[in-house]
Structure formats: structure tokens, C-alpha cells
Length: 543
Image (cartoon, rainbow, N blue to C red; front, side, top):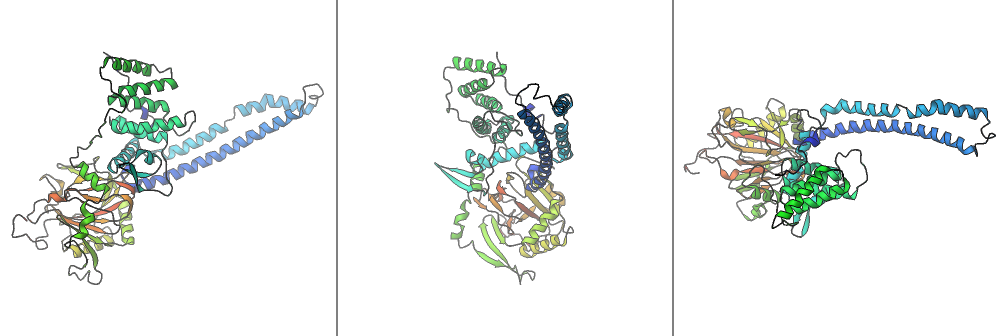
């Protein structure tokens, strides 16, 4: 019996911080704050470089001084060195000055100052979970938007479209990924035993490491040998033994002393020699894992890439635009633009529901209390992989603006939004690849925390877009087959329950991953109780 020697899981990261998770990756607002941290580190590095330049310039001065003296001594004859001043300074240099140069602590002092400044900020810096979460976010975007990985590494967002590449977003200043960047993403996938992604990202890492082999970058933690090591074992785990063998031999070319790789090569050759039908390069099809076991994944991702049937909604005369007052004195002089998006489920978009000042101030009020978003799990609430964002709850007493917003929602919908008949305003900021996979807003279990208000189920959702995004982030209604793009300052309203109180299955919806941008939304969930005269029951019990 034999055992292949795999790269050790997790040990590669031991040098990283092991503090509690900061969850910086779950909200772009937190990532923005991190830019300020790096600006401080950049200042510290700048100060270090200035001190090092002064030190190097002083060494250069000493070098040029001594070199000049030697240039003026044409030979070592008695006449040339007879000058007592030359003799004295020579002896002094050899006895003291060269010792001071060789044992100078200025370089150490400069490095220590840089280290000390780094340690001051260390507790605020991203954790391993942040790095892992950011890597998962990129892989999520790659999958949902069918991104071309080579284009992504070069800073371009392009989608596979047959033999052509469709440009989704082209940044003005593309940010490319290094070989080390690609390795860390591939290593994250490898640690999750997700070889579908580890193969792609480690291939990219190996390619770029090969291109720059022999060069050295201070900030890199990985190498070509690391990429080949994990890539070879990823291929082995997917059954592509011949490719694992070729990569292991390449590894041994760069590091002939590795007994572990040499042993793996022997085992690969033994496997290939005893297996009747060897797996040839390219013959292995590696399926993409469904981490959250999402049954509607294909429909969901398709709606994130397109608008589904919404592009043809203009052809239906029942779906129209109008100015809405709802016969409310509050809206008579300032009606709000209403666009009926869908009839089943009933969903409308209210355009320019808030203005820029209101949207910005709601975000500011919420930013101080943002915490990792949770979902209902039985009677409890917990953070999960299928919802990546941070959220905060704002009472109507938090600021006059929130009270004013509640009044506007009540006037427009005709519903009672006072507690406990509606929840406090929830403000959400999405993170790197931030999303919320298909879910219902209304409770589907009697044990759900939604019922803690003792005001029934969530009858309706009023969601306000507080920002715009460059790409992605649509709200997709899975079974209804349409999605609504992010429209800044607008609000999306829909009924979660039928008039008979049963949940509307067509309201299954998702927040598509944000490809590029900083997505903020505010949710107002309105409950059944308190709406008895606002939304009356139908005479048809099935309605």
C-alpha cells in the first residue's frame, strides 16, 4: 500500500494573522476603510525608503571618497604612500571606519521602525478569513458571470460567449493580478477540495511564475514550485495522473532535492504502468461544485447575466408607467414615477423614491452599526456563505430622515409601517462578490424569527436602492423569470403573500453578486397584522 505525499493543508498560511475574523470582505464599506489603513502603511514605507536612501547615499559618499584616494595612488611605491596624512587616514579607515560601515545598525534601525509601525496597525488589518472570503468572492463572480479567467487576471471583465468574448465591464485603469495573487485564489479552492477552481487558478499562477522565473519580489509568499506542487496534486485528485506526473517532473527540474516529489513521481509512474486505460491530458471533465446545493443555480445565474423575460415586458399593455399619488395628500404635489415590472408576482419600481442627499445620509447613519448579515435557521439566525453582506437596523427615532421615509412608504403603499406592523429599516452593504442566493422574504417555517414581532408573516417587501453599481447586483426573481437591475434612488415593491395569507412561490428571488461597484439597499418588511383594512381579503379563498 502506498500513499501520495500531498501538500499540507493550511500550513502554508501559518504566517498569517490568527486573530478573530474581522469580516472585512463582507462589505465594500469596510474595504473602503481598509484603503485608509494601506495609505498609512504606504506612508510608513515611504519614510523607511527616505531613510534608506539617506543611508545608501552616505555609503556611496564613503565609497566614492575611498575610491578617489585609490585613483590618485598610481602605484604602491614608497613615494606614493609617503604622505603621512595618507598613511594616517588609511590606518584610521582600516581600524575604525570600515568596522563602522560593516557593523552599522542604521539599516536594522530603519527596518525596526518599519516593523514597529506595521505592528501598530496589525490588529486592524484583514484576517485569514478576509483573504479567503475575498478569494471565494472572485471565484463566485467568475462562475455566475461566466468570466474569462485570463481576461480577469489582466484586469478585464469578459464573458464567454461561444467563440467570442463579450465585454461586461472595462475599467479605465485595469488592475492586473500577479502570479502570487492567482496562487492564493487557487490555494483557497484547493483547501476546500474544490479542484474545479484550483486547477484554473493554479494553472494561471504557474504560467505567470514561469514567465518571471528567476526574478524576486519582496511581497510574494509563493513560488513556481508551490504552484506546480498544488497543481500536480489537484490533477491527481481529478484523475489526470499523466498531467500530475508531467508537473511533478517539472517541479523536480527546479528543485531536484525534493524527496516528496520524487516519491510522488514513482507512484504516478506505477499507476500509469498498471492502469489499462490511462487518462490522457484533457480527457478529464471536472465538474463545478455546488457548494450550497442550490437547486435553482442555473436559472439564478442565467438571470444574473441577463434580464430574463423583462426585456419583452414593454410589449404587455398591462405593464405600464405612471405617476403615483395613491390619493395621498403627502404625494399630491410630488407624485412618484411608478413602473409595473410584473403582475405575477406583482412587482413595481418607484423611480426617484429618494434623492441623493437622503440616500447618502441613510448610508452614513447605517455605516456605524454594520454587522455581518444573518439568515433565519430554524429559531436561530446565523451567518452563511450564501449571503455575503453587512447590515444595520435603523429605528424611526434614529433620525428625522428615517421617520420621513416611513411616512413616504406608508403614503405610497397605503400600508401601516409603524412597529410592530413593520420591521425597522434594514440597510445592507454588499461585499466582494456580495450576493444573497435565492430565498423568500416571508417565513416558510412556523419557527422562523420573523414571527417574533407577533404581527404575522411578512406580507410585502419595499427595497430601496441607495447606490448604483457598474456591473452586476440585479434582483432576480427565479420562477417568474425576470431580473431588475440596480437603479439608484429607486425602490422595488412586491407582495410576498397571497391575499389568503399563503406564501407566493413566485417571489423566490436573489441578490445577484456585485461584479463591480458598491451596492447599498434599504429594506422595509411589512407584516400581515395592521393591514386588515389596507389589504383586504379576497372573496376567492384561492387568491
